[in-house]
Length: 189
Image (cartoon, rainbow, N blue to C red; front, side):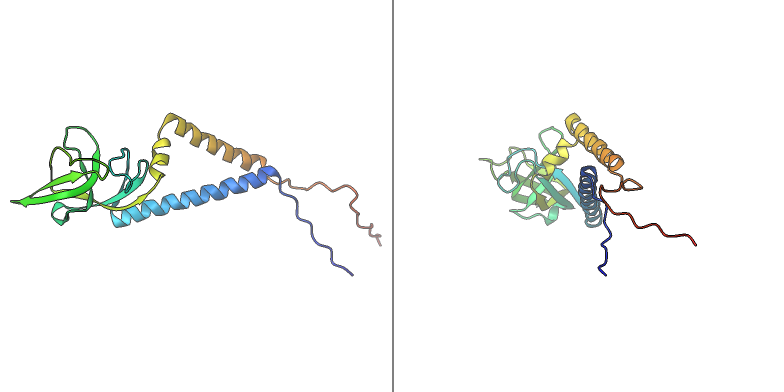
């Protein structure tokens, strides 16, 4: 006698979509958790590249990571992140062209790879952000998520995720297919 295969209920489009969104969200969440943990353990800080002064080495929209080190450890050719010296707010990430240490004070001359000349002012620093690595495009995504449109996109994604979870639930009693045979009644004794 041939064994009957137990039929699995078919998954609806909502269920497939819900599964895909949940999997994507889980992977994205895991990447975020691992990134934060690695940064915390290794003492790394992220910065978004917003100008083209270091292209093609550091493209606009990249997310770079740096570790704070004493300025005395810097050598010519290193890529460093330092506070702006021109009175503006923010950070500058450029390549070191010259290092001078005198009486415990370190002065750096910096230049962006894409710039024609060195930065006009020297940087007097005690510590710098020493470049560790870069993730292209990740900075653009991080900045976009902070805009009103980005916040609306994240909210829409969460709403869609909730919708597919709610509407994608399986029915408790799957409906019978047409033409399916019923088991013969059992006689009562």
